[in-house]
Length: 252
Image: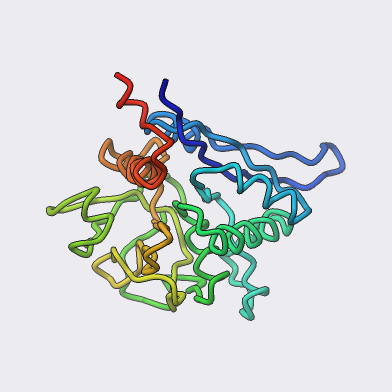
């Protein structure tokens, strides 16, 4: 019998309101993508205790750090808040920062998506551009304020993990962000950029840690069939790295 890799996914959080209790929820695109790639998704709630979080992570074979529609709080990064910025609840950002730190320390194979990519970069020593349009006036459109179907070309570094996923040729990805990676954290190297220079992906340079960050959203309904292979890349690495785990297709 094959054993499916257990892949953790963090979720969104909304604090209590006058008319509603506090709420956590998970974007179905992430757990559907993990399932389709041959993994077994496990939802990781924003637990407050580090030992509890470590116990969660010790059970996992891999991790997806999910994006969301909100931003990291720029004040925590020493910046004035831009009018376009909508900071996520502090409980989510606090938890995500701890999650990124512990994932890096434990060398858990990780796919970081959207704001998850930004969080991992910041936690490990990198910085962000808070608003692309102001910092780079000639930049392409990276977010449509009305529709969720903005797309642009990316240029992938040959020889990278993403090159193995997408290969040569013109690649277009969905885009819905106004923040972006500025200075890259030491553990990473850039593996994809937009033609305007915005960093669109990175991966770990540490040989004992699989970590890929993508600014686009391969889990989203606006993604292409090729984008699904970003999740498959994580699952294939996990299966190769852990002989006790057999990919689902191997049992067929």
